[in-house]
Structure formats: structure tokens, C-alpha cells
Length: 100
Image 1 (cartoon, rainbow, N blue to C red):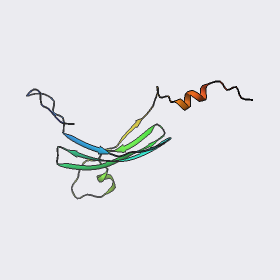
Image 2: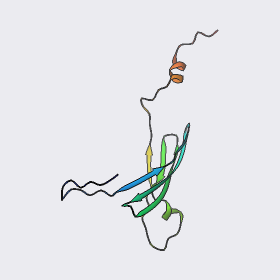
Image 3: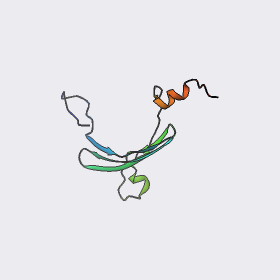
């Protein structure tokens, strides 16, 4: 995200450059992330998804390692649902079977 000031008194948003990698399986997912805030502060984080529950952090370094200077850490959780998700295999399994 790049901040673009439109008006002199507009809300200021921090500039963020983020990249992440994700490994997804049925009912499980994991992924690390790297973020750079205002092109100076580098943070490492990641997330774990178990079913629809997501637990993660954008800055996990202060949680994992002891630091001399206090820096911020964060933690988030979320739910991931696919109410309109459908594929060919699911449609086929709902068709009536004329098996003998």
C-alpha cells in the first residue's frame, strides 16, 4: 500500500510493502510473511489456519525473541468461510446415483 496524500489535512496511512508465501491443504494452512513499514522497519510474521480458524501475527519477532528495546508485536485471528464455493466434484457427488 502506498500512501497518496490528496488533501493537506487528509488521514495519513503508513506505507506498507508485504510479501507472503502460503501452503494450503484441506483443513490446514500455514504461511510466513515479510513486511516493510515506511520503507524502514522490517517485520516477520506468519499464520496458521486450522479449518476455518486463522491465527497469526504480522510482527512475531518480539513474541519469539527477547529484545533490549521494546518494539510492538501484534496478534490476529479470523474465520474463513466459502459460502458460494463449489466445484465439479461436489456437484457430481450431489447427483442422484443409479447404482446397482
